[in-house]
Structure formats: C-alpha cells, structure tokens
Image 1 (cartoon, rainbow, N blue to C red):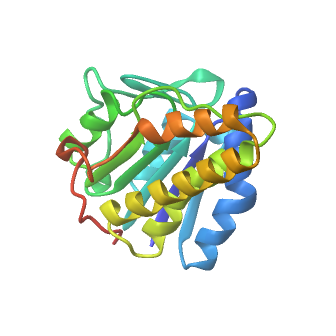
Image 2: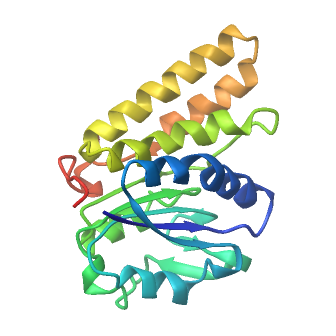
Length: 210
C-alpha cells in the first residue's frame, strides 16, 4: 500500500511531531509493508501534496503540522487545504483515501469537508493538540497508534479504539508517575480526538486501507 506522509517543520511544535514520526513511526510503517511518499520540511508544500495525492493506489494521507478549524498548513505556514470552499483541485485519485491529521482543530470543519469531498474517513482533533515538553514522545506515540493500526489492516473504527486505549493507558501511567499536569494534557487530547467511530460525518468506520 502507498502512504503519503507530510510533516511541516516550521516551528518547535511541528518539528517535534515530525521528528518523532520520521524516527519512530515511519520505519514501523515500512516494516509492515507500506510504501511511503514522504514530504517534510521545505518539501511540505501545497504543490507537493497535490502532486503526491495523484499517485495511483494511495491508501492513507497522514500529516502533521499546524491547523485551524477550516485549514491545514505546510512549511512556512503555507495554506495546503482549505474547507471554505473545499479545494476543487484535490485529484480524483485521492477520493477514497483515509486522512489522518496531527494538527490543531482540523476536525471542526476541514475533516468534514474531506469526507464530503469523497475521502473514506477522517481522523483528527477538534481543539488544540497539546504536549508536555518534558515527555513529548508519549503524546506523539499515542497519536501514532492510529497510523500503525491502519497500516496493519484494521478498519478505521478499530484503529481509533486501539488508539483510545493507548491514550488511556499512558494517562494512567503519567498519573502513577506523579505527573498530573501531563496526564491532564493527554486526557484533553483524547477528549478531542475525532473520527467515524463516534460521528458519521467523519466517514466510514469500517473503511480499510487498500
């Protein structure tokens, strides 16, 4: 299967998320059999992602960077996707892919626009995504469970269930370790994780990667 990865590195948050995904997540996806098309740093542009989305047999678009309710941004805060109106130039070959964005607030409007535009499912957050600078990898690892589960063959709904369990386990671990602030931040992220397992506006919970 082909997976498009996209990671802006325009500031500390974007760099931390992208670096974790590059070092830890992507080797795991490759070992599971995924073929990656990777756009990162200066290559994380609108032109690059639209060209990559035209690739045949693309199954998953997983991106990290900055977002707001109706938009997702690439390197140097270039607007990559806009929900109002939804981009008409998204290639038809991208219809049916699963989209997962590690970005603030994109589930509010943009995720719904992706599904209305033909993608199989959207997974993301409807508020800010927080992490503790003292233990950032715990936060990114919970989100990464989504991509690992999808590439392993789980339907979107089941992948989300696995991720929610990972969030809950890490929250419990942080509380036991005497880190209530970090636990509260991770709980906030879990509370705002959105997908088709709980809202049909985000697509089909039974969708699997092709």
